[in-house]
Amino acid sequence: MIYRLCLVFLGLSTLWIALALLRAPSWTIVPGFVLGWAVIDFGSGVVHMLLDYVHLPTSFRADLLFFAPRRDTPEYTRMRKAFFARLNAFWRIAYDFKVHHHTPRALGRRSLRELTRDTLVVGGLPVLLVLDVAIAVAAPPPWLVAAGLAMAIGAIYIQYFHSVMHRTDVPPLIAAMQRIRLVMTAEAHQAHHDDPRRSFAIISGWTNPLLDRIFVLLARLGICRSEHLVPERFDAADPAAPVPAWRA
Ligand SMILES: [Zn+2]
Ligand SMILES: [Zn+2]
Image 1 (tube, protein in one colour):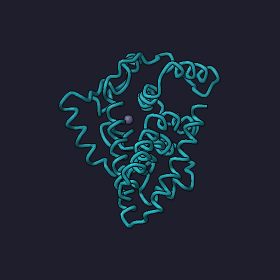
Image 2 (tube, rainbow, N blue to C red; image 1 turned 135 degrees about the horizontal axis):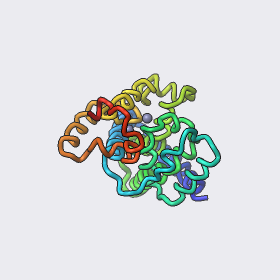
Image 3 (cartoon, rainbow, N blue to C red; image 1 turned 180 degrees about the horizontal axis):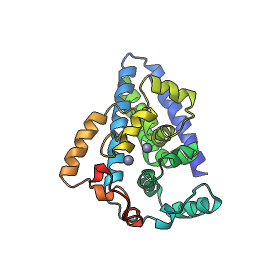
Image 4 (cartoon, rainbow, N blue to C red; image 1 turned 90 degrees about the vertical axis):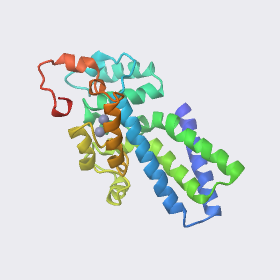
C-alpha cells in the first residue's frame, strides 16, 4: 500500500516537473540533465564505497549469509523475508551491498519492485519533494530542474541499473542507455568485482576516476578498511581460503 502511494507520488511529481520544463524550454536542460546524472553517479559510488568498507554495527544474519548451497529455495526466501521485515530501508540497502560480493548474480534475479522499493523512499522521493517545492515557490532555472530530475531518476533506479550489470538479458531501453554511456556495461562493472578497491560507481561510471582517488585517501586515513568489506563470519567460515590479492 505504501509502495503504491509512493508510485502515485512519483508519477504526479514527474508530471509536475515535466510540465515545468515544458513551460520554459531551454537549451540548458540537456547539460543540466548530464550534470545531475554525473552527480548521482558520484553519489552512487560514495554510498557503495562506504557501505562496502565501513563497519556496520548490526548483526548480519550469518545463517542467512551462509545458507548454502542454494538460495533459490522457499526456505531461503522465507528466512530472508523474515529478516528483512525487521530492518528499515537503510539497513536493507546496506545488507544488499554487504552480501553482494558473495553472490553478485543474485542481484540480477531481483524484481523491479524489490530493487526500487527502498531507494524510492530514501533516495528518489526526498529529491523529488525538494524539487516540487522549489518549482512551486522559487521557479528555479531549467538546467537546475533537469539536474534534479536526473538525480531523482538515478537515485530510484540505482540498484536496478546495477542489477542489469549482473544479467545477460539486458532490456532494450537499458541497452540503448549503455550504448550512449548513460549506464555502465557488465564488463565495465566487472572491474569492481575483480578488484573491489576501484570502480565504485554503479550508474554511468563517469566519476570512477575521481572515486578511485577518494578511496585511496579514505583507505590511508583508515576510514575505509578492507576487513569490513565482508562480515567477519565470511572469512571465519573458510580460514583456509586463499587471501585475495587485493586484501593481501
Ligand atoms: Zn562493492
Ligand atoms: Zn555488482
